[in-house]
Image 1 (tube, helix red, strand yellow):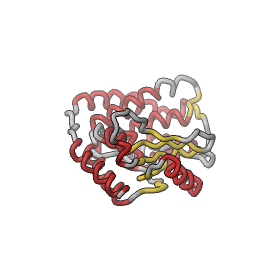
Image 2: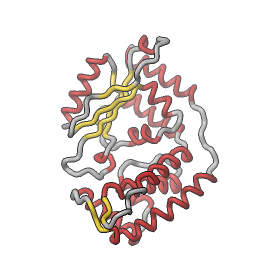
Image 3: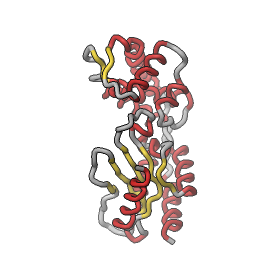
Image 4: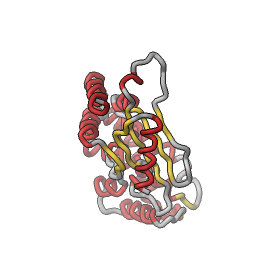
Length: 256
C-alpha cells in the first residue's frame, strides 16, 4: 500500500502541476488503534508555482482523490496550511507529529515543525480536544454495551488535554504514548489498556459495567479541564511575518 500511495502522490503532482512537500498517515493507523483491515487516511501538504498565487481570484486550496473503502487522501496547499498553523490548528499539528510519513522534503518540513512549536497554543488545543471529547461522550455510555471505538474517541482527546497540561507541548498522535505519558498503574489504566487491546482485535463492544473507572475519569476530567482552560492565560501570538518568510523561501527552494 505504501508504494501505491507514493504512486498516487506522484500522479497528483503531474496532473495538478504541484510539488508535494509532505505526506503522512493521519487516522487510526497513526494513532496506533488500527486493525489489519482499517483504511488509510493520507494527508499531504503541497505547493503550486509562484504565478498561481499572484492572482485576485480566490482559488481552491484543497486537493483530494475519490474516497475508496481502503484509501482516503486529502491535501492542503501550503499557504492554507500556514494560515492554520498561525492559529495553532490541532489537525495540522497532528499531521506534523505523525510517525507514519510517506514523503517529506526534509529541510523544509523540519523547519515547518520548528515553526509549529513556536505557534503552538495550549489554550487553543485544549479547547479543541476538550470539545471533541464532549461531543463524542454524548453517546458513549448510554446503553448496557459501550462501543469500543467511540469510548476511545472520548478517552484519546482527554488524554491529549492531560498531556498538554502536564508537558505544555504538542501532544503525540499515538494513544499508547498518551497512556504511558500521563497515566500511572491504576484501574483506569487497566481499563484503557484493555480497550486498546480490544480495538486492535476488532472487538466492537464491551459491557459498560467493565468501564467504571473510565466513566468516572471522563466525568471528572471534563469538569476539571473546563475550569483549567478557562483560567489559562491566552498564549497565542501572531507569527505572520515568520510564516510569510517561510512561504516565500519555500517557493524559491521548490521551484527555482
